[in-house]
Length: 108
Image (tube, one colour):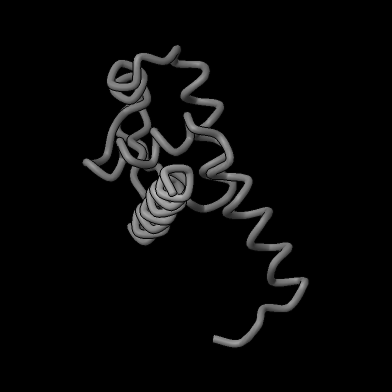
């Protein structure tokens, strides 16, 4: 891939980085990776107040990372694109390597 333009990087930051900039939103994404859920089920699974989950889901929807569809009076949420989990897992792997490298350098 070529070096991204400043405009592309700005879009990346606004649409992806800010969306995953809160650990609660990352937990929501991982939970939705297990399958679609109603907001109440997400709230219970994550032990978070329903208004908190709804607020985070709204941001994830605005950034097109989750989709929702009506199920009677309720809404069911799902990941819009499973690749976000690959991105998060890559970041976790990188962090693990960085932490292990730092620990190794302290032991030297």
